[in-house]
Amino acid sequence: MSHMRDRVDIPAEQLLYVDSILRVTCTAMPVSSMIRIVGEVDACNSGELLRALTQARQVDDSLIIDVGGLSFVDVTGLRVLAAVAEAGGAVICNTPPQMSRLMGLLRMPAFD
Image (cartoon, rainbow, N blue to C red; front, top):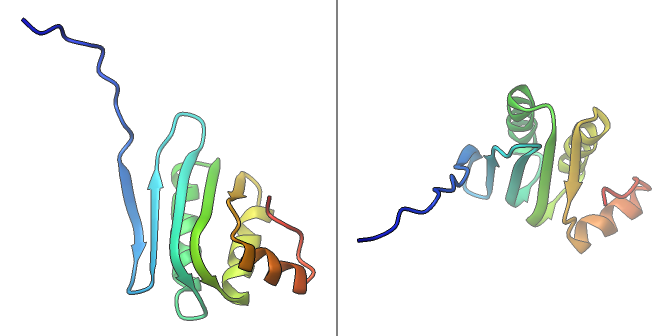
């Protein structure tokens, strides 16, 4: 006879946006939802990134945005992330070195 253990619900990751170079997912958590951005953000998809982050904010006004999976981001992508962070309620974490370097060159404040 097997004993039934307390079931732990693991939050499901929901796809917010995907294209050939970018994937944005959201995992609802008790305090803040976790957004993961993986791939590349440039002028072609930065508008979609903003739309996805705006959609996530409508569901949860407290977001943790993990950008550690970004292999490339251009100025348009940085502007989207900065606007979301400046609007409040969003913490951007795991900033890759190349993103930090670009932010430094542009004299933008660091995310983390």
